[in-house]
Length: 75
Image (tube, rainbow, N blue to C red):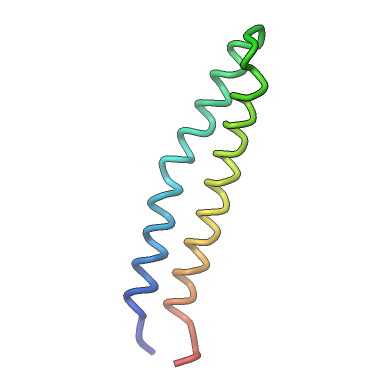
């Protein structure tokens, strides 16, 4: 059983894209809750939530891609 290195690299790219989003999303949400009286509270909160969801999706897709490169039996 061999590892497909191209698919493995693609999975690692997904994970490396998710890593900064795991920090940026909560920081944006926290800063929006610090400024609840500001008129941009709702849009900034929405952006923070979208960033957190995107981080989770990229992490899931990256792990799934890595698992497919390691254990795929189609070859």
